[in-house]
Length: 507
Image (cartoon, rainbow, N blue to C red; front, side, top):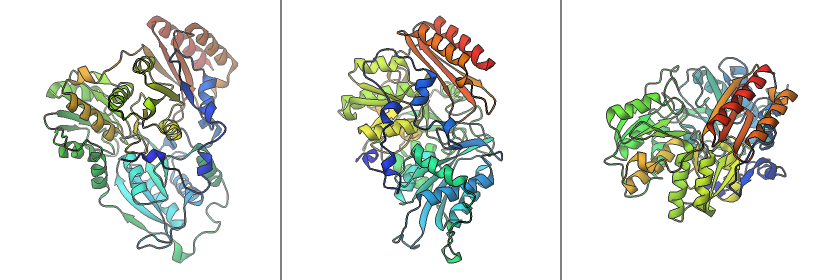
């Protein structure tokens, strides 16, 4: 199958933005596989437009608490109209609706999705666009269908792994890729314009129209199944799948069942308020206990919009994204299918993974945090495997964004091919001790800009130099400072986290 990541973006005013002079500063290429230290400054340098330098977009779209700015109906309408102004193309040959550009809108299962969906639909319709509503489907399904339906824009209304009170807006170009930072910045400029809702609006006969897509689920199920090796099935595997009461509550059990697995589906009864609640990829206790209780061979955990994957072995032990990426890398490399014998991950990936891949003569490249930056690096270098420790796994031979269900099928295929137990096959390297801590701060504060915090980070860097890695960064989706410390000495990790936490909390 051709690699869709090799295709070039053709949206007006976007193509020239994919490559720019800041590319080298934004991407961290780890070539010597030695321990590295990443300071707050270097982490921020990794993205040309940091969340703090933009008004609305973070590392994964616009996100916030529903009915509180920026996740309001008014804002959703403005985002839609601004996006249409920047991205819609002339469609003179669209079958059935000549002259209308097209936008596809999907969502997860949050109750607030209804109001945001309708608000965005209204904004696009007012700009003369054809709106296709899919209902609840995974984020990767929106990316795929945007390409398949030749839409100008894809919209996913979701806050991913966040609690139900939050929601978000993710945007895709007509090629199925998340938008470059600079294009989001252009959309932001339109959002803030006073004439956004009045300038050059379509005449009444050119106002758009909306339709609901009835076969979105079926199309996506067939799409992910097409990535599974021909002639192979999941017959004989008992699989527990936790759908997080989210967007995959129908598609994941159905795809696994059609591939002949013995499926035990949990967290498949969304009520608008239970998405990600003590379930899914970020809360695996339910899955772990269910796998052991049912004597299952393996467990699959997806998050609210099903773009990330965490797995559990038959003993209920968690297998994170780093382990799964390393497994896929070595398996593909052995088959000659790993492009350039290279894997793209982020600065968060474990040092143990880096060491393991180096021993297999596989190159590891690191980017800033966020699957969008992983994808951009993959496109730039022609690589076909990348992802994040959190479970975003991008398989560019098949898709354009992280896809939890598709990644699970690839791992399950290896499990079937090798015929062993998940505990023996899916954990391929010994992780270096790593601890993460999130420190909440009040909106408007910038703790990482404070001299006392910067000095504390420098001191911590000197203590860990040559033995591990340190990353201190502001979250792109929440008001949090994230600290990651990784070293062979657990006591050193605890000491550094404690010292930095005290200073950051004071500032």
